[in-house]
Image 1: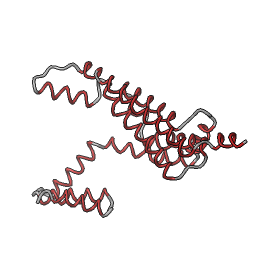
Image 2: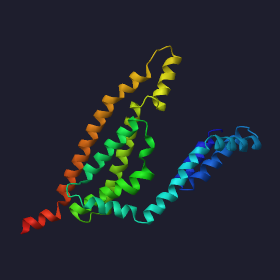
Image 3: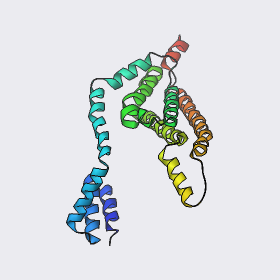
Image 4: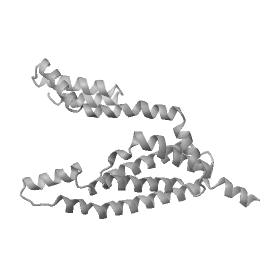
Length: 230
């Protein structure tokens, strides 16, 4: 019966109800079924919010990004990139992937991110490069470009931060090994993340180069076509 909360979450998400309401009600029902007093249950909610209140700082970024977009940040990013003739979708995302991975390796995880960097800057720049080279592309292709930009952020952060010795993953593995009597050096563990990060950068760069080639093959270049016609 205690697991009924999980079922409520699945049903609520399937019916597309408000996620916050679904999760809150599921937690309340689960606690009550488990025999937890209502007052204690509400206290647990308050303590959890207080302990994780720093997470609400992320909400502040939303109106800031909204104001920037309203004042033309995305449009200006696209215009800027369109002035560089050699800029392509793949090259722009590869450049961001390198910056994201290097910054994460130095512990600077907040430099990038989907809401503060990918959506207002990287994705519009990549779309601007596509528009400058191919003209207007279908909305489906724009979504694909945005997805590649978001993927580069995820990949760069995930594999780059493993090089930073003070990252949570390294410290978690260090604590786990110590509990089981296995001596490990966090610095060596971080150094072993370098080959993986380099290999991932190489593999994903190839994927982005192939993306450029697919776009060239599918849409071609209006400028080049005009020159060939002449």
